[in-house]
Length: 257
Image: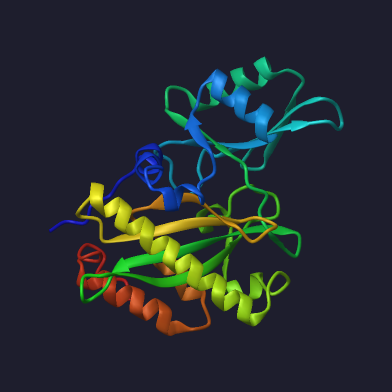
């Protein structure tokens, strides 16, 4: 049985929003349009505009209302930063950037920082050898200083969560927090499986705000397992690889160790 991949961020979002439990962890998200962008910027001050079918953080735009150096809007794509005095100028720039692709608008979460750099969390959830969902790995992703996304392919640095959270939690708090992340991520897997029976793995990207509340940013049904090689504990990657090999992830990539 082949592994099912689900590319649409919007399709996965709509499924998760049906769950009362998951909804409390999801930033408000809407399909991109003039009204949704204007309304969400007015309400939240900062949003992320994302391609529905994008990968590796490509095409993600951070938009926020500004008061300095002047009233208007700040736009950042990759390392390019622009300012627009009016909403209409901002909107037309995004329309030109996205071309004919479908986008979503998501409430921006102000991420926790480590050494002045933003970070978020990737949780790996897989079908184990007993065909049950298991949270097999948790890793932090430290953003490149000049970028808005944390993805490894966009210059982010995979790093142990213990190191990134050292300024924000003690040992006991972090252990409890990691258990919360595992429970949340397994719940996501079960919800998505109801709609997509052949998924075997998910990578859950989670933002943490200043109150240590987790927010589900995105769910990937074909996550990169190799970032977990960066963890000091090599047994985590070995288990991830063992499970992935068992459900057929590496049939076409068997040359990699």
